[in-house]
Length: 368
Image 1 (cartoon, helix red, strand yellow):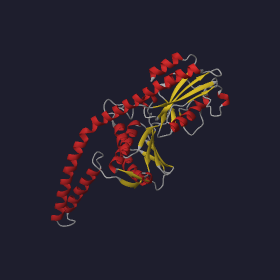
Image 2: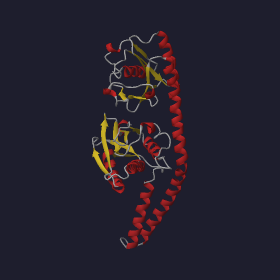
Image 3: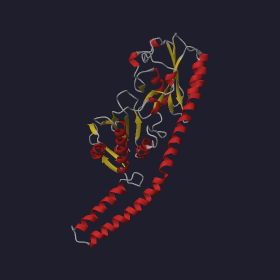
């Protein structure tokens, strides 16, 4: 995409241009990483703005809604932005704007290409024909990039977890034998004797080991998401010397999960947070929940370490990412287990001093 944008930048003289990608989970447009090389926001009111919810009024969002509904390319050429009530004044010098919807081969919305000029009626018919051709090339580039990222993610996870499934099977087999022997020992000894108590403890540990394996076959369980979340935070966070600041807003929300997988991603996020806040006197994470309509539970998980820069943001859920010499697959596994429970995880944009903030969405049991 960078090459396509550079070609466009050279082709369209005295033109600001950007690509906004569609985030289906957040139902919003967000600046593509390569865009800010070619598009500078000059209005201080928008310096920190990189996301535009689709239900807000901007020309790009309007075009996105049209393309999303029609499932075909939509183009709007606004000759005088001062007369358009939806125009977002990111650059006061802009006088005209052209926006084109970007769609993939399945006619699904990918995003919007936006171009601005500093004079009225800046884009003529010849410009529009060229812009539409460019939009098709950008759409192909985005789709190929997304397919490549998915392939890279699936390959990385498969390479790192292929052994885990085999070990999980063997582990469960041996755990079953241990539990059976412990049961037989209890049956052959006097109840509540020291040997009976030891055997019971062995049996309980065996079942706990089996149920804590995120790669073992597990039944789905419907739980009160806040109760389950708080239970595991209180269980794991003290071991990491982390304080949890809880803000609960999804009372009685029921979600279908796999308990060991849920516990795994909570443990992984807490471990990452503890590592990111190494050396800090107080290690704290913010965990907040809320209900989006009746269909989705949202969990915000935020630490207060150095955060993940925008340069690395696109990598964390698609390929190995680490600040250490080895490893870097933790967030890939987190994404895998969350998606296996029909959830989604995303990393919020970097903000100085705010650490890494993740949004996790799970469908409610009633919506499935």
